[in-house]
Image (cartoon, rainbow, N blue to C red):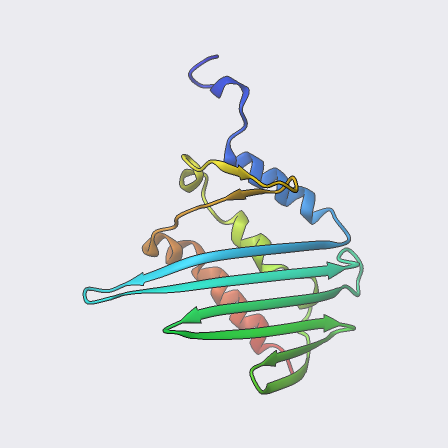
Amino acid sequence: CSLFAGCGKQSTYKTVQAALAKTQALSEMSVKTEMDMTISTESMTMAMPMTLEVKAKDAKSSNPTILTKLSLSMLGQTIAAEIYQEDGWSYAVMGDMKTKTKSAPQMDQYDYSEEMMQMIPEALMKNVELEKGENGSATATITIPGEKFTEIYSDLVDSLGENLSGAE
């Protein structure tokens, strides 16, 4: 072993990046992202767990089918939304509200959960260990401080907002 080689063990960052590259090459995929966010102020701390699930068929085609499920809990309330995308249309359900809109250009081919993972700097994964699941999966638990979260994801949030506002 040498000090710089790490005894042949690949870093969590490189493992995650390799997994993302493999996922992007698939024509069908199922991705689940769980985030346990906490917002703290001087007087209180509020937990905001969020789950994002994306299932895609024909992801590499010009007409993929994508189902996205989002669940966010805050102050004892859970907000759930589902978006089904096919043939250039998005069908969304959030509570009692149902909408059908024309998808923004290339929105059907965009997976925000993958981009979110790609944007995490290597330094934040430096001391993160992968937990191996019984089914062969691996989980990385990464803590992103609030100011760093804002720095990393402000462009992504702006981009998502622009894509959603581009829907007719």
